Image (cartoon, rainbow, N blue to C red; front, side, top):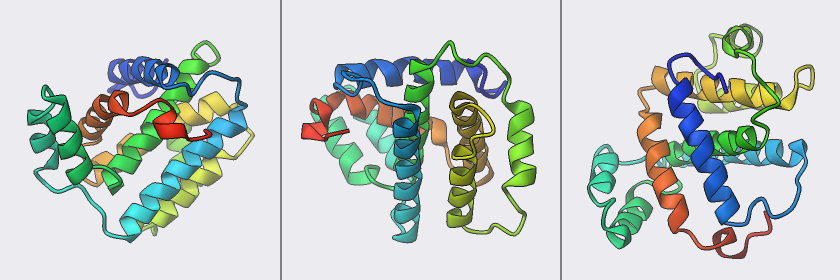
Length: 196
């Protein structure tokens, strides 16, 4: 699925991994509407905003420290929970992972290129005066809920938009996504009994 020419292969890998893990954890045992998935994506953006609001950021050394413990699962889980879990970077990763899961389920629904729409998004929804994450999150939510384009198209664009946001703000989102995707399989079925 084309996302951003610079990230296509990596995002396709994330899509495969997100769907596989979600199925293993019971998140796709029943049918859910597009609106269900879009609401969950919005909830992740809101969690990222809360983390930002509460100054919860991954420690500068966190990614390296956690990565060093990845082969020792119990150490990895503890290191991840102590240094990354529920931080701004973690919640942005969750947002992209939710997008990837949705796109994996709808893989054949969209074959287009998101680059034009991504640029259009920046012109229409993002103003240069946005200096804080809440304005960016609000613009993303407006875009996700604007039904003038198919949901799959909006979600594909959202991945590129969030990756660009992270790049512009010196957040190594690739690293945090890979760490979160290593953490998610260690979690219990339905993350301990969550409804959705």
